[in-house]
Image (cartoon, rainbow, N blue to C red; front, side):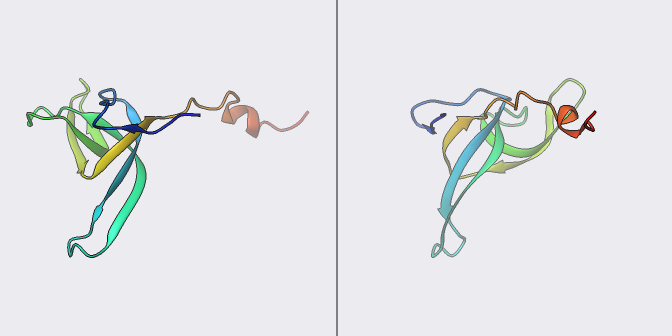
Length: 95
């Protein structure tokens, strides 16, 4: 079983989809929120620092040119391996 890794202890791999845990308060500062989502840790060409982002679009060379940055990321973990059986196997009609 994979475990959550605290961001302060270890940075995630760059340009690899990972699961992130985010938390914070809404704009009024009254409501606490937290959730998980799949994101990437990237270094955009227009910024000096790395950041977490979702919905990334890349050009032919793989350079990110669009995406939504995330804030409040405190923990991350690598994604599990895909299932061993493929979807094609599961959708075949029985003989």
